[in-house]
Length: 87
Image (cartoon, rainbow, N blue to C red; front, side, top):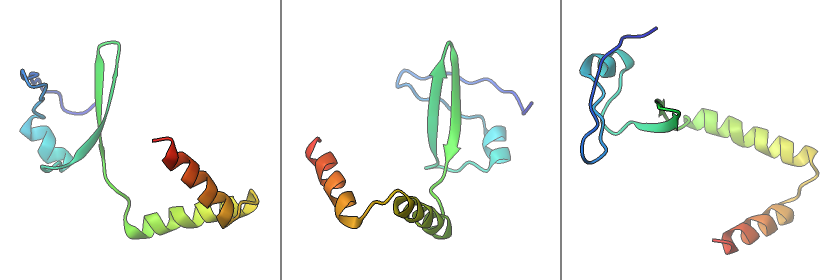
């Protein structure tokens, strides 16, 4: 298991991640987290956007899956338009 430390919740709902843990994990100001909470347990998972290479790979996978499913550009445009109208 990793290093253990304690912290407190502020009146504004803020939690300070102890310095030794921030340093060990390389966390800097502005890092975004996914927060999961269940039955008295809170988990913070640092998230980072994909690199351009990773993003292009994801796009290629999505295009391939769409072709295999028989989707065409007009089909996708129609679905996107419908979803935007629901907002």
